[in-house]
Image 1: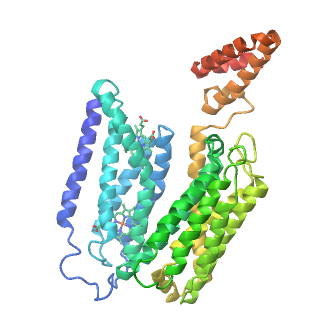
Image 2 (image 1 turned 135 degrees about the horizontal axis):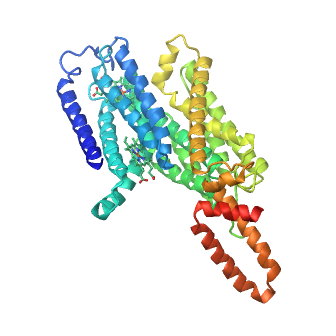
Amino acid sequence: MVVSRASGAASLSLLCIAAFAEMAMAHDHHDGDSKIADGDTVSQEPIDTILWIHIFIQMFAYGVIFPIGMVLGITKSRWHVPTQIVGSILALLGFFLGHAHGGREFVGGNVHSGFANILQLLLIGQVVLGLYLKGHWEKGVNGRIRKLIRPCHSIIGKAMPVLSWTQMIFGGITTLGFCQGEHLGQCLAHFIMGSAFIAYAVLLTIILLVGQVWMRRCGRSQEFVDSAVIGAWGCVNTFTEHRWGTAWVKNDWQHTTMGIIWWCAGLAGMWLSKDRDGNPKRNFIPGFVIFMTGWAMSAHPQELMVSAMTHSMFGKTLMAAGLTRIIEIAFVLKDNQSTSEDGRSWNSFQYIPVFLLYAAGFLFMGATEEQMALVHNSALDGVSYILILYSLAFLVFLFSNMLIRLYDRLANPAIDIKNPANGHARANGRTVEEGRLHDAEEFELDGLMSDDEGDESRRMLRRSEDRTSLDTPSTLGKNNEASVN
Ligand code: HEM
Ligand code: HEM
């Protein structure tokens, strides 16, 4: 069994290496006569079917299957391996199609093909490490190797969605021939900043849906962390947006002063995130910084009508996100971390600032000069373009919610209220049952002890708690049944 697994892993990696060698030799469509006209970045031909299939397959494999598989891996589900194997097969197919396309020709040595090599090597590495882990060789030297391999597989696995996101953006700009030459700086600004808004939105979604208790326990208010990041980012922007020693051009002043307000506000936000007793305290600063950023960005002068419209909608979306965030913290949560004690629920209003951040991210990512010129010269109007970007934001918002729900279901299964005995094998059921058990014991001890016995009984309680946590889930179930009867 073990031998067959090892030989399977070996033949898979050999296959991949052979495929790479063949690709390297067969891949010559950038050499010879280029069909790309002088001054252009792509040829005039349409994208052929093979490349379309490549795009859809890779988006499905890297954008849908692998992230689901990642959640299944983190929660140690037995579906992790089958899911990632399906993903890997699709990715392999997509890889061949990416090399086999005809039709439109792209700039040689483009960033998408360059980064593709890194991503493919990581994926091969990930599969090989995964197969090793799957072998469950846990004794002797293998045990020690396993200890090294597990964190590697875990870190690469969690980095994968971010890397895939980057590769998809690279795919998009390569397809359209964007971001070459002087456009590079603007592309970087829009894609990095837009992705940062979306990443922040994903983090806020995670905290809202599964991280409220964790946030409360970590002893810092959420605004402390937000303000620290805002401050650090502001420092970087203060010094990088203008080339010091040269003239102040275009929007240099606006970008630099934005950096300055970010670190000034960040410092104030960190200060306000403690109350007079040193406890974590919520505040309005990060929301307000988002609001001001939206206002400033919407005021950027634009040449094209559609560009002015997209930027203005981006600004309004950000301002709305900032404003609703302040309302959420001050009035909906009344400065608390959660609406409920157990941190398992939320007010529907709390989704608004989060969703608006996804939308703002997409609007910003879709507003580079080249994209704006493309929309301007097409039949598409500004309103429809903005609606499309909002639709994308809804899809990614939905998918993040689905992934987090999947994680939550597998890591903290819901308690079966009608039939508590069923809950005993479940992680969350255990916490609840421990709580009940604890209450019952405390009640019994309270009745028996006098004041000076307090210390001893507390020690007993602690011992009994330790015991409970060591108990097997099935005993816990029985204990619980006994205390209920
Ligand atoms: C098809 C090949 C793969 C196999 C056989 C495999 C196998 C495994 C196994 C056995 C574990 C459990 C490790 C343990 O806890 O002892 C695991 C965990 C994990 N895998 Fe994979 N895996 C594969 C591909 C992938 C890919 C492509 C990704 C990323 C997209 C990935 C992401 C993860 C993550 C995030 C974990 C959780 C690690 C943790 O506990 O933090 N795996 N994998
Ligand atoms: C994360 C998923 C993706 C991966 C891993 C991937 C990987 C690859 C690979 C390996 C190639 C062959 C590179 C070469 O010619 O040397 C390729 C080509 C290409 N891919 Fe992707 N791709 C992905 C997603 C996308 C997306 C979403 C798009 C478009 C929206 C896209 C557009 C292209 C284009 C235009 C080419 C041809 C580049 C050329 O001929 O130079 N890809 N891709």
